[in-house]
Length: 212
Image (cartoon, rainbow, N blue to C red; front, side, top):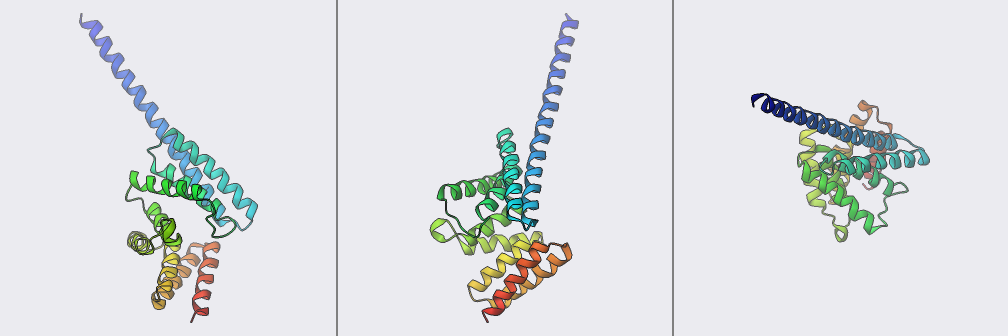
């Protein structure tokens, strides 16, 4: 009687091991797809050619959508969808023409933060979105600024967060702090070799100087 029991235990242990390995493999596939999706988003941001940017964002969104389909509990996958979808919506300027797309965009970033509340990149993206959006569409500049300041406590080199804070400060009349954020953003962008962010920081500083 002992032998059948041992066989049953061994079979069960083998099954658990196989399931565990399969789960790890699936998780690895999801993370790989999400990382590739985010890499495409970053490549699109760095490109200066519209069609290339669009191609990167479309490929990135497709990869991210596959990751979400495999695992809807992956914060990275939802954030990758948000990143690429948001950039596609902004491809020809700061326009938010589709309420349906905006709702989907907001749902993706909210889901990413629900799954991982300490996800710094997602916190930054949420803060920027809250500042960019008008109040009628869910914007909340004060809450967005609070989020971005929290991000800088964890990541002082977050250029995009600094640039958005510069704009937020300028809009409420705090020009000294706006200049400080934009100037430091320009320094960091140069140190990081980010030509796209250097140009954005220079444009922000030019706007601040023009408003004096």
